[in-house]
Length: 270
Image (cartoon, rainbow, N blue to C red):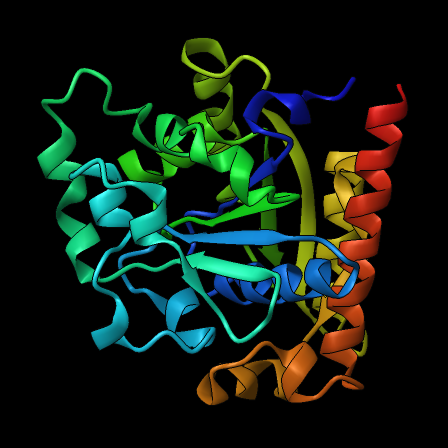
């Protein structure tokens, strides 16, 4: 039996990288949409105070009455914070800038690292029957990101195909190791996905070669290309899979979802 049994059958994946601008939120939105296309039920947890995942899925700021801030700080019920998106099997817990103060407000809470873990294991979780819960982390290794890692079964790391891409990875790996030692021994690395990849660019190819040499099978075979349609889609408040289903970006996220599901089927069979 796989570890999916630990939270009502949902596999919880934190999407994290402390560097900004690596395609983290873009990956969260589009991987969620691609998993839905594969017949999965998905919950996206927006844990970034910028709230870009919420905006990118069409949740207006004035409609974010209850958010991840309420879930963590006010211990709100899941039913109050979950919002339906325009995609039938995709829901979101939205975020607002309120979340930026959560680090300070939670510092005196003894269970401060376990708040999201406990919230995503409310008895109500089993009623929703999510196949996947994706957590879009903020671009920093703060208490919110630690909460995501303590709550998750695994961490998916978007890595931009640029100079110095691997440099920040060591700090992220160190944080994952610390969370394993202190709070979540079963936490594993889901994989590293290369984003903004340009196959005509020598640098992209060099980053890929370095990543595969250093990280081996942890690097997904699927690469997310630099694609104008992927960049345009959020301004229309929809995933690229809906904005332009035949674009290279949409095809890549479909491949990533299929690769992810196949990996989990392999793990479950072990």
